Amino acid sequence: MDLRIFTEPQQGASHADLLAVAQATRSAGFSAFFRSDHLLAMGGGTGLPGPSDSIASLAALAAQVPDIRFGTLVTAATFRHPSMLAIGAATIDDISGGRLDLGMGAGWFDAEHKAYGINFGTSFGERFDRLTEQLEILTGLWATPIGETFSHHGRHFDLTDAPGLPKPIQRDLAGRPKVPLVLGGRGPKRTPALAARFADDFNVGFADLEAVTVSHDRVRTACTAIDRDPGEIVYSVALPVCCGRTPAELATRAAAIGRDVEDLRENGFAGSPAEIVDKLGTFAAAGTQRAYLQVLDLADTDHVALLGADVLPHVAAL
Image (cartoon, rainbow, N blue to C red; front, side, top):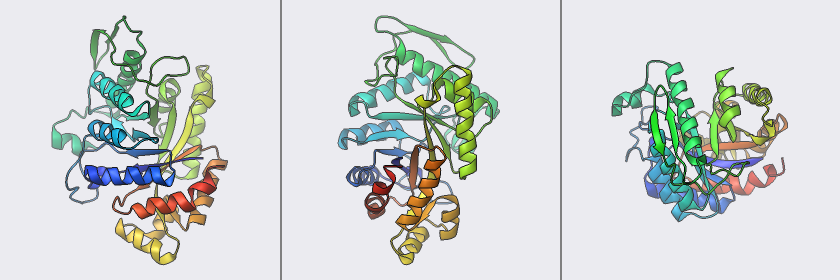
C-alpha cells in the first residue's frame, strides 16, 4: 500500500509550515505531499495567516523539495477557469520534473464561495456538470498535438482554437501529455461514470471500510461498462491520522487537534503504530491500494517522522 501525507493549510499554515511538513514527508519516506484547496478555516479557527493559493504553493514546494510527488485533494472546479488551471498544472509539472497529481472535485463549501464572491452555482448537479466540462477541457488541452488547436463549446465554458500549451511532462498510457487526475466521491451513478472516464486515482474520503469498498467497486464496474481496464486506476482512501507510541503521547496529539482519541480510532487511522498498521491492513485486504493520511497539526513534524519509522515499513508490502 502506498502512503501519502495530506494537509489542510486553510486551518492555519504559512509557506514555511508547509515546507517543513513536505521536507519531513520526504525524509520519512512517504511518496507524496498533498494539500487541500480551501479559502476558509473550518471548525471555528482563525486560519491565520490565511489561505494560500494551491497552485502557487505547490509550485514553490515542488521547486524546493525533490523526489516526492505533490498534489491537491481536492481543487474545486468552481475556483479556476479550466484553461488557466491547465496552464498552472502543466507549469508545476515542469517545475517538479513530472511530479504533480491534480485532485479535482465539484466544490461543496458554500461559505467560502460567498466570502470571496465565487459563483457556487444553484445545485450540485450544476457543479457536477461544470466539473465534467473542466475535466474534458483539461485533458483536451493537454492532449492536443503541438501545432493543432482545441475547441470546446459547452454550457459553462467556451474555447476556440486554443493551442493547448504548455504541455505537462507526464504522459498517459496512450503517450499523450497528462497530469494524473485524482477524483473522488460516494455518488452511486455519475461519480463512478466520471471516474471511469478520467481518474488515475479514485479517492473516497472520511468514510468507513464498507462505504469505501462499495464506492471503489462501483468505479470498477463503471470502467468495465466503457471497456476500460479497472486496473488502470489506483483505489485510495483519505482519513485523519493520529499516532502515539504511548497512550499519553496519543492523547497529547489528539488534544492538539481538538479530537477525541476514541472518535479518531473509529473514524480515522489512530492509536499505536501497530493499531494503525492493522487498520490499514484491513483496507488493503479489501482492495484499497493507497491511503492519504490527513495530518492536522502541521507544527508536529515528529508525528510524520514517527509514522514513517513505525508505520510505513510495515505497510509498504500490503
